[in-house]
Length: 351
Image (tube, rainbow, N blue to C red; front, side, top):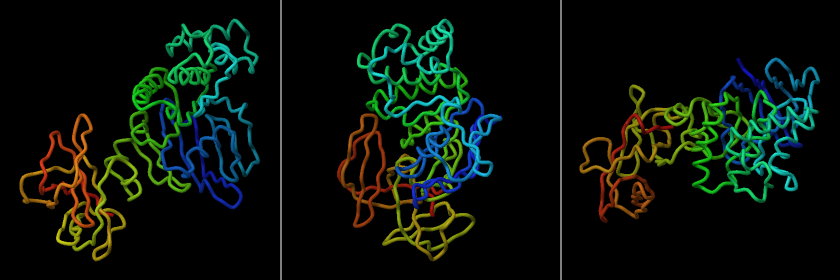
């Protein structure tokens, strides 16, 4: 059952269209990430669902309640949608304790003090904040502040929790720990969550499904595995993962494959939508799919090593000749020289 349905949503700022007919749904117990570059419309979509932006066309339904319908002139204010919202900045009251911050939404809803205390204590315990109820936001770490913001959003059992870049204020190491904690929490509590992020690794780690937005429309949606392993468009292929991009001309096509040709090289790959025989095209392959090998037998090119970077668990190498630059990972360091690079045909997508 869908707990959130968005149908043909349009929104513009003046003459500038931001959302151009977006439709999506969120199932009960599902985590969906809105992913995309800056300006793609993901935060605007979240804010429209929350009631913080007014769309110009379309419909938004939460369970069996219509909260926005342009045709029927229905638009419920944010406070009547009963959604949990975690802001990017956390937006904690600096003069209120952790307990009072979390209880604030219950106070606005006139929940009795005894029930409010019980619900606040329960949610703080669930998030590992039970001993911090009397502290103030400035006495907490970034990760603890984030959990207080989540507790405040959860305390009145909303049908959907909306998270706007919930990990962006944390440093890199803490982000990895926090996304694991957040995913575990959402699954354990059976929450339905809509998450905005520009970080594709974060989206893949936390989500059951990803909606990739591009210029106000949904470019592609699917499971993290589908988005990463089976991109349907060049934009999706390039946005997800760390990639090599190889421009060239399609010299031959056969049986769902294409041969991409450049100056002194040719490579076979999977023929994707948009590529045509005799036309210019671009190949995309994930860095981890490229292998450094000993000989030129197969789908391979030979390039000199330009530079290497040690990443801790692996080395990243750049191979370059003229305009062609390719990257690949190895477990060990490489000596200066020329190397053969192998491209699995089914993993080289030609658009």
